[in-house]
Amino acid sequence: MENSQIIAQTSDKHCTHDIKVSCGSCRLNTICMPVSLHIDDIDQLNKIIQRGRPLHKGEYLYRAGDPFTAVYAIRSGAVKALTISDSGNEQVTGFYLPGEVVGLDGLANNTHTNSVIALETSSICEIPFNRLEEVSMQLPKLQRHFLQLMSREITQEQQIISLLGKSSAEARIASLLLSISTRNSSRSLSSTQFLLPMSRTDIGNYLGLTIETVSRTFARLQKARVISVDKKEVSINDIAGLQQLAKGAE
Amino acid sequence: MENSQIIAQTSDKHCTHDIKVSCGSCRLNTICMPVSLHIDDIDQLNKIIQRGRPLHKGEYLYRAGDPFTAVYAIRSGAVKALTISDSGNEQVTGFYLPGEVVGLDGLANNTHTNSVIALETSSICEIPFNRLEEVSMQLPKLQRHFLQLMSREITQEQQIISLLGKSSAEARIASLLLSISTRNSSRSLSSTQFLLPMSRTDIGNYLGLTIETVSRTFARLQKARVISVDKKEVSINDIAGLQQLAKGAE
DNA sequence: CGATCCATTGAAAGATGTCAAGCGTAGTGG
DNA sequence: CCACTACGCTTGACATCTTTCAATGGATCG
Image (tube, rainbow over all chains, first blue to last red; front, side, top):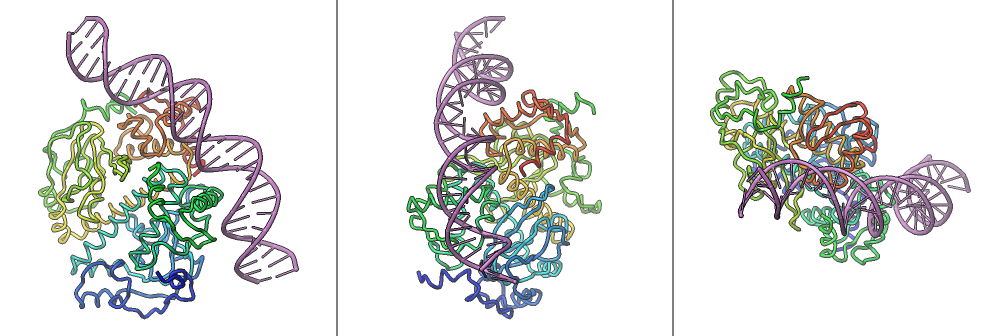
């Protein structure tokens, strides 16, 4: 596919950070709100969604402990979610790409348990939860959709557990790359070439590896001609091989 | 606390497997349904819940791929949830104790992604989901409660991710023990003495360790006088020390 | 231009996994 | 009632992988 475009995918320069896009015309709405809503319903949903100014790299979307008031759809850019343990250590619990929804962690206790930080300049749709609940009452489809979003989050996390539980460093890295790859292709971006929005440190933290191991593993995968890496630029040369590695010690 | 009773907690002999208990009189209802429902509402909920025959050790509650029709509350006993990877390997994704709810994994695609198997003789309340949705429409509290149950599942899994991501074998085992301990005490059981319902193999699979490492770690913790272990019988001697270990490499 | 952050690489240490053997218990069948 | 087998658990020795410690280079930012 078209390289230059794709490589620019996570770059700020080409991102659309305009804050006026309505849900109906947002090209991500099939990911974020994959419910076939009636035009009037979309309109209703559209009304409650707030689009703030873009978040810059390192800025917080919300912090652990903040009261839960809304969920957030990523419109462009990328964010990471992390918890902070008693001992003060950060643990990255997930990366979220455009079209994906964060903030559901706050529902259990009306308080967010994670903090969410922008990995690059990102624009975010804020969906106030109490108003969403109201609208949902009238729109069972939307109601159902949110349950499904949560359920999907649960199954995704179970996959991560599966990953962290059993796998070698190679398998973990391979899985992460494949995850980003599939998520990209569901957004009609290249599944074989992309820019990693996160640092090696974030990757290591997320996958339970030191940054040295992450670095070495990238090097090894490159040496094996499965991928090519240059800093944050990744291309997957042998997707079947990568899948094999991801399964490997699964 | 009263030893003999507590040790018998997970033993079949003393469990109440009677299938007539109503939600209103179930001593677990504060865990399973911690919503302050009006007496009429409880009655309504009670009507849709089905109580089947007890599940014996090794029997399936449902299998991955089964259509999603219900969620299930554990009334006595214990179960494990597991996914099966492409390569055919099992991965235990969670243990569920009395009062806890399984089955929410099926919501995303109307199909269960996990299988759930009884670790010992267990009685289960089946809550048909479509009827639950109907009732929920009239009971916003119940609606909210289910969202919270799911959110709780999400945050719990994030804790596991946190655990698997960073920790040593000691920290993982310590965390599991502490988890069971707190869950026990919320059910008014001893937080310091209990029987593990699961095998070493299950523990290892869940925590991403080999059974040898599990065994050795138990031995080490015992040697350090933090716990005492004899087969499935565990008592925690130094809960602060255990918490320290759980944090340790977190 | 210096300071800082991020990434890479090497060497040594430490932890877990692998292989192998042995023990105790539960269940089976003679 | 007594083998006998199967299974779960434990323990040891060794191999393998990841971490740790340390040094270096490149990029970014003020």
